[in-house]
Length: 169
Image 1: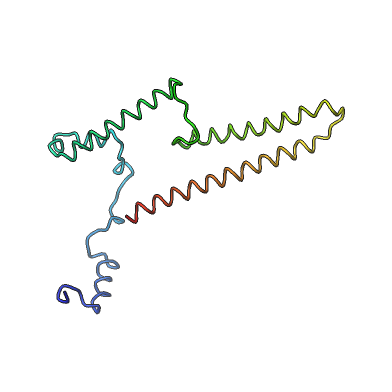
Image 2: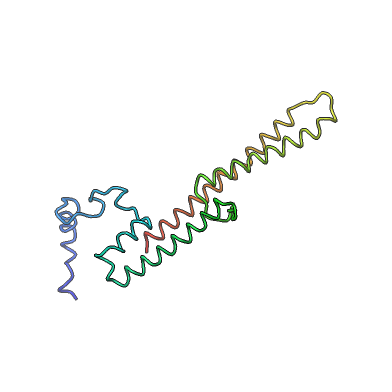
């Protein structure tokens, strides 16, 4: 094995020439690329691997088959959601807009509860000090914001974990 390994004395020189002086092949970091080059949508993959260039390969045919099947499942689910025959829950995979919409709705409901409690006690007093109401409302809003921030932090942490685990594989 010794004849195939570069001597430790040469490591610094090789590093300097390849990395510092950039005399070696380009690394992935040095190659220009755009986001469009990394679009792996089902439609693009089906079009690519279903083309004449690929359709003779069994693995390409299987990829097209699976992506087409999965796309059909997603379309069926979307049709059911749009028709109202299926209602998404908070446990379903939701996009960022839908998650934010649901969080705002929950916050509005909590605010409405505070309003309802306030109105139910209103008839008891002719002259009411509204400090309690606004303190309770403020407390509920701050509590919910902390919960939302914690949820978003956990989601970002999970996304980062998934990203790192994929990069480490």
